[in-house]
Image (cartoon, rainbow, N blue to C red; front, side):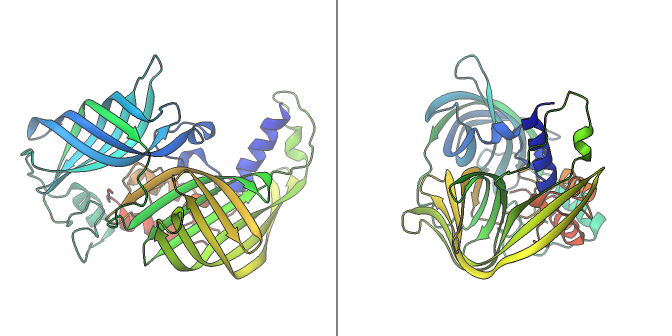
Length: 395
């Protein structure tokens, strides 16, 4: 067995980096590194098919941000859209995939955008998810204004869901910086690829409402595993070899500044951070121990995203980690917690993903740092209730 494969498998196992939690439309660890954030302008005609019938939207225009395959340079392309549309009296909310074929090969990326319902698309039903999930879990959604609900609408507002498809002309361009002031919610995911000037491997997630709640967490390792030899394919002897390695885990404890377009950055968070060193020892035959050491507590630090929204740096005291943004979203209304696979809706898939990992901690099979919403290094009741409370929320 290839030594690189063994090392990578062990690191993924220990760090809980699960490919099930990477953005929708992305199929591998390599492919999430091959995307970049960009502004997309879409124009064209779409067909909507649902219970009320089939309707055509002529002259649709939308502007949104998406993670675009690096093979698609800035410019204009013909694309096919396939996905869902949820219509209210005020707006039509689209989420799905764009398929672009600039040459022979086809490229796909996931998108979500909103347009005003000036096309006369009929609305006859009550909000489907409030009926399906809200009653089941006994949740009564109360919101201060129309934007507090993920759809930008009140839960009692009539809505109709359609299948949507059609041809669009899309223009891919650099993200304008700074973002418009009404963009008050930001969600970022990134791959950590350096630490202290050395190659590293890890994950970062930021979920922020400007001026209010902000959550940032990250973990990374330099992957300095001991040499464990070469093995033939199918040889499981390596499972009985003990080894120890450690990695950093960082959590934002208190944000003192959260701004878009601060200085020469696109996004900036300053605050007090907690930094842990987690040592994981594998004893062979599936046995392991895990220890947590507090390295820094309430230490000053900052998280900075470059002006083009493509790279980030996390600095806590004299500890520095950097990497690449692999998911970016900004909204003028709430971005809910709990959308594990970034398909712009919190649904049963996310709940099942959490439930399967219930009770796991770092080092246990299926632990996933990305779904540890309360930063306690355990997938537990807090994660289940977070997803259940937001079930059905699109954004």
